[in-house]
Amino acid sequence: MWLINTQTFELEYVTSAPQTGYAILSHTWEEDEILFKDMDDIGTAKLKKGWQKVHETCRLTRERSLSHAWVDTCCIDKSSSAELSEAINSMFEWYRNSRVCFVHLTDFAAPDSTKPSPDLQKQLAQCRWFMRGWTLAS
Image (cartoon, rainbow, N blue to C red; front, side):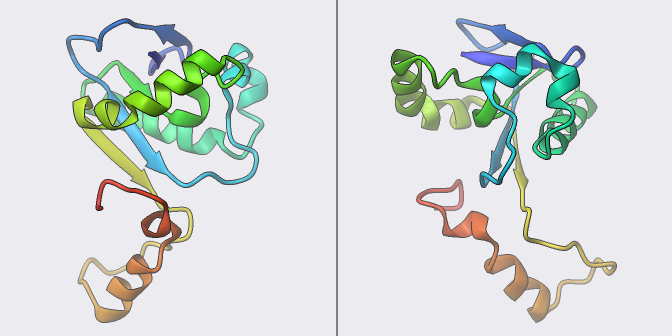
């Protein structure tokens, strides 16, 4: 499996998870995502809209003293049918074995108040992330 080194943003191939574990990002795909091939040139990758998700995932991962993160859009080499098939078959296990899972909700505007409200709960429930084929909430 390929993991992002959260210090260098380079992809590293590992045969087993690092002893410290890794973080994983659950998200919905948007336009201009960072792909596996984009990780060869971080300068160019940073120009894409999807970089914000990768960067923020790495930052949150480092805050939890973890050195690696997994983001499906850029950690799977989709040009290799064998790797893509193995990734699809292993996806549940990768989520289960992660130390922490971050969820990125592109269609949710965080409120100023920390008090839950019915409107807030309704807005959250309508996020596209919950409408996917499967989520961690399923």
